[in-house]
Image (cartoon, rainbow, N blue to C red):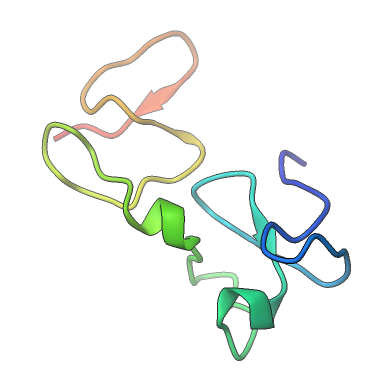
Amino acid sequence: DGWEALCLACGDGGELVCCDGCPAVFHLACAGLERMPRDDEDFFCNACQKDRCGSCGEGPLYKAEHIVCGEEKGGLSARGC
């Protein structure tokens, strides 16, 4: 599925929330969350919260999107400015 199997913060398994920006997963408590995000809500770990496009500054960036703003390479989808 593309995500890690163990919590990045504590190293344990169990019910984990997946970051929408990278392969990291976390327990709710380790991520500082009180509940699981709904399907229509995004969750970005602290590292991904800081990730922004180098050209336009938009972010955080989703794992499935290409980081270089406005470019397309192969099958990667680009986030255009």
